Image (tube, rainbow over all chains, first blue to last red; front, side, top):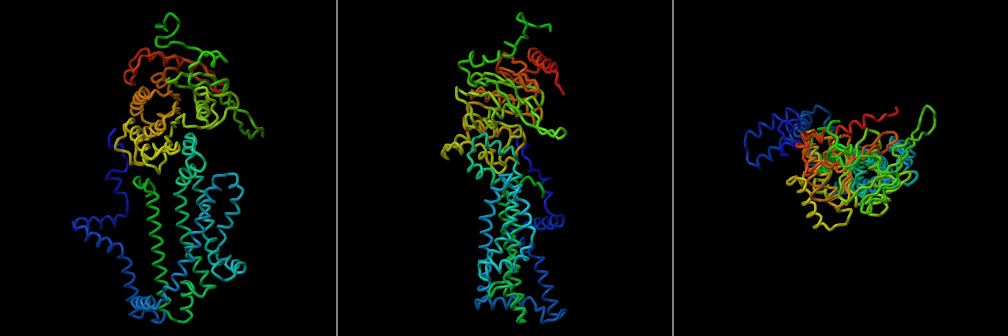
Length: 293
Length: 291
C-alpha cells in the first residue's frame, strides 16, 4: 500500500481552496520569485489592502468635507487624538477596565459553561428535561435583562461581569451539549470496550469529540460578550470603552469618540484572529481533508 | 455430493453438528472461553398494539473456544452476531447465561479482550501512534514503554512511516490496520472482530485477510471473528459457527481442517474450500426465516 492511499495530497484538491481572484493574485506574486522576506511583506500588504483603501476613502471624504467635518473628522486626526489619549493614560484607563470585565465574565462562562455542557450532554434524559429552559435563556436578549441585573446586583462591577457571564453562558452550554450529542457513538463504544474509566472517558473522548462544536460556541459568545459589555458600560458605568464612546459623544469630543471606536475595531479583529488560530489548532487533525472548505 | 468422505463429511471438515447443550463446559477443560446458555432479549415498542414486545436476539447459545483458536461466526443479518460480540466484550449483559474466560466470569469490559469494529472507530483527533497508544494509557503503561510498544504494533500491521498521520489522511484499509494495531497493543488474550473487513474493497479485503492470518500466527491470540461472508469464515477460521435468525441460535458448528498457512488467492482455487463454503451456504438456505 503506497502513498496514493493518502487522501488530500493531490494538487487538484489543494486548488479548491480560496477564491479565484485571490488565486490569480497569488500566482502573480509567486511568479515574481521574490525572496522570503519580500514575499512576507507582499502578503501583509495584500492582506491589508482593503483596509488601507477604506481608510484612504475616509481621509479623503473628510478632507473634501463631504460630510459635516465636526461629525466626521479625518482618520489622521482620529489617530493623532488616539495617540494623545494613549500618552495621557486616558486610553489605558478605559481599555483596561473593559478588558478586565470582558475577560472575567467570559472566562467564568467558559469555566462553568463547558463542564456543565459536557455533563448535561452526557445525561440525555436530564438534557431533555432542561433543554426548553436553556433555550429560553439563550434566546432571550441579554439587553432586555440589563435592568434586571442592575436591580438585583446594583451598578457596580459585579452586575456588569454577571451580565457578560450570563450573555455567554447559554450559548457555551448549548454548543457543548450539541457537541457531546454529535460524538460518534462508535467512538464511545470503542473507548468503553477498552475499559476506559469515566473521568478518562470525558478527558480523552467526550471533550475532544465535542471540541468542534465548543469552539463554534466560543466564537459566537466572544462576539456577543463584546456587545453585552458595551451595552452595560453605556448604561451604567464611569469608565470603560462603552462609557467613553457615550461620554465623548455627549461632550461633542468627536475625534475621541472615533478613537474609541477604532480601538474597539482593533479589539474585535484581535479576538477574531486569535479564535481562528485556536480553531486551526483544535482542528489540525481535519485540516488536510478540506471538508466544508 | 460426489466427494463426500466415508464418515459423511466433506474433506476439510473434521466435525459438524451442534455441540450437546449443557455439556460445553464439561468436555473442554483447557478451553479459553466458555459461553454457556446465553440468552439476550430486547424490548421493542409496538406502536400499533401499544405494548412492549419481546425480541429474542440470542437464545440457547453455548460454545467453548480453545486457546489460540480462530472462530468465525456467520449468519444472516439480524441473527444476533453483533449482540453476541457486545456481550463478549462486556458492553452489554446477557439476560441469562454467562461467559468465562480462563475460568474467570466476564462482568464487564476489560483489557483482556480487544475489540475491532466494522467502522474502525479510530479517534479522529489522534494520530496513528496516539490511537494505538490509547489502551496503553488506560493500562497506565509508562510513556517510554508505550511508544516502544506502539512502534512494534504499527510495524506489525505494516504502517511504518504513517505514525503521525491522522485517520482522515488514511484509506479504509489503513484505518482498519490501525484499529487492529490499537486492539493488539495492550496485549489482550482474545481479539473480538465485528465484520472488520466489510467496508473495504475486495482487493484490500484479501490483503487484510492474509495479513490477519499472519498476525494471528505470530501473536497466537484467540480470535472470534464475525462476518456475513461465508468464504471469509472458511478461509480464516478453525471453526465456523453457523447461526440462524429470530431467535439467534447456533445452527451448526463446523471444524475446518484446511491446511495452513492459508492464503486468500490459493483458497479461491481450492476445491475443498469451495465445497465447504457451499455446504455452509446450503445450511443458511435451508434456514426458514419466519417473517
